[in-house]
Figure 1 (cartoon, one colour):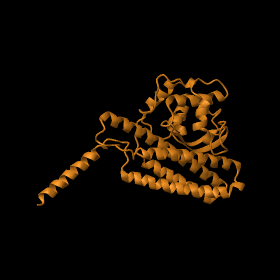
Figure 2 (cartoon, rainbow, N blue to C red):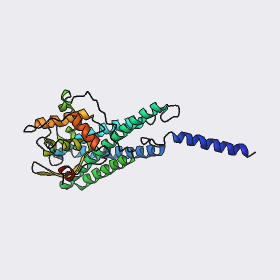
Figure 3 (cartoon, rainbow, N blue to C red):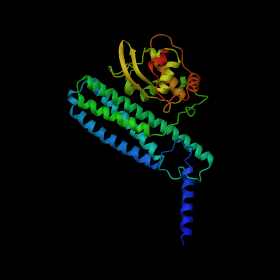
Length: 306
């Protein structure tokens, strides 16, 4: 009488192994447990964000103009991050995701989309982490320890979320259009959409929190330097126009195509004094191929060749 029960257990084990095997080798996959963990952290961040906003609203009358600007940009980033996060998580809820009836080609396309979305999410979490850490430093300088503590807590939360998202180190899935011409793209609009939140609408920076980009050697120098910064980010202390800035800029290579990266850099180089060679999509592709396994921000020393 026990034999059927044994067979049942074996059959169930085989079915479970078969279904689990659908995710083997899929670096884009997040288990149910991982999904619950990241959603729990996300909910905590949302609550902390609301508490922070309430505190800012109470202090709005005495808030310095520079901090008001950072505060508004922080809210804008938070909304964009939330939209991206919800889009990423909705991908795990769609019917048929990871099921065996998908053919190999369908699975490959799904995994590629998910890997790109995961990378976009990590970039957004990294950007919010950098923003909150920078705002914490500003509050510390203004002797506002409570606000600084709140921002540090938010930064830690985003760092935690970033670590939860599956990582795929290869950059081979960056969007490339062989016929794309950066000169046909609107670099000014792309800058406004992706860079102005931190570096200001006119690319002149925001106080001593985020550096200006116009006439910065990090933009006007040798082509590979700005390309690597936009693609993989920059972390460490730099000097711009006699002012020291110390923070972390996140990667943008999952959110921008290679032609868009070139268009933004060319826009900033055109706004800077002097005659600076234009960057082509081929330049970006070449740098991407050279550093395709790069998965961390560059240091100023690396970019300076020191």
